[in-house]
Length: 178
Image (tube, rainbow, N blue to C red; front, top):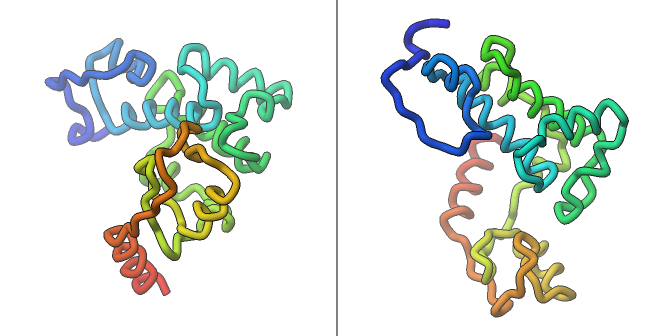
């Protein structure tokens, strides 16, 4: 690995489960240290479970074809192929040796994103929970639900505020990609 991507005099702080095992052993930090942390975040997003023993639980679920049983049901219905792809990517990022982990730039970011996940908001707005949603989607949710779709906590009101900053960024992005 080039010297420009290895740092010795760095004192990263963080939660144990997100820290690169090679950093813990050698004191060297690299971009692959970030890859390790990303792997844990991916597995947590899939399952909404604590990181303690999570990689092992995911490996077992994949081996026994029971991944669906440990996915976060509050996140909706995960498409099976996408969930398996993300679980395998998360585990790859969590390889113990940094040389066995994927490169963020070349192997993680280019992961194919299914078309149904590429939908961009047309009218972003902020709900009372502080999260931004597409106006049509959150409007449909609020027509039958009093709780936040993100936190499942009761919403103090059903007011929606236009997210003009995000809308501006979406318009700019759409102009550049079409």
